[in-house]
Amino acid sequence: QKEVEQDPGPLSVPEGAIVSLNCTYSNSAFQYFMWYRQYSRKGPELLMYTYSSGNKEDGRFTAQVDKSSKYISLFIRDSQPSDSATYLCAMSPQSGGSYIPTFGRGTSLIVHP
Amino acid sequence: DTGVSQDPRHKITKRGQNVTFRCDPISEHNRLYWYRQTLGQGPEFLTYFQNEAQLEKSRLLSDRFSAERPKGSFSTLEIQRTEQGDSAMYLCASSLLSPSDRFFGPGTRLTVL
Image 1 (cartoon, one colour):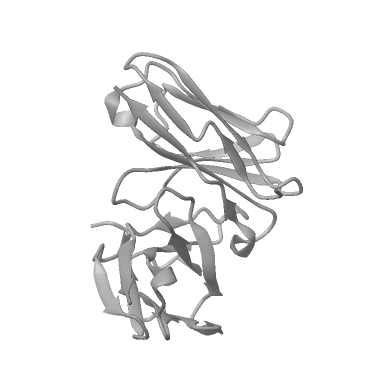
Image 2 (tube, rainbow over the protein chains, first blue to last red; image 1 turned 60 degrees about the horizontal axis):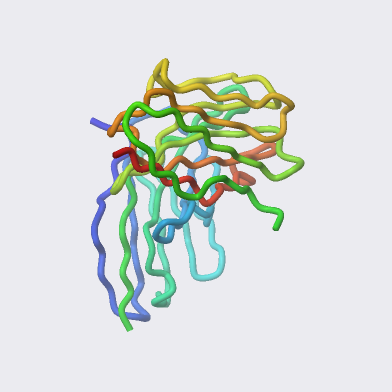
């Protein structure tokens, strides 16, 4: 079993839909939780970052962390075709300041007009 | 452009040849990471530098792989005696203090024939 599990999709939704992306993890030491967006043949781009449990909102994006369930989510409201990309969850313990994240395999999202 | 840059963007080589990739981080970032990403998978950690010191290496980094960051600025990743299994996207990322300021470069796509 991998430390971080993420459904690869693809997830296909109509424009304007609310998208829910999820990851589960097994390592209780993870403290930092991140969501990256990766367009085809590009490097990942950090979207959201949270420390420990709770919710964080940034525009159309909301990140949730439930450490008791070892489950994190990213919600995208009013999804747009430009949101079509692969979404990677990543998480790391606090280890000497290196914060080396473990990534999920990514979920491919397709938002069709 | 003040982002992370990588060179070359694409490299095609024959099995058994040596290849070297370069990463130029964001100038004030003291932490530099190398990752490998294969199709349909998330990035896998290879190695981490803080300034010029290589502080962590993954088990994935076999003896054929070596990385340097001689003056704490740019970094190189060399793969000796390339194998077809080395075909992947090699990503570099840099950061200053926390996971929230980690930026990825566009990657170098390696194809080993």
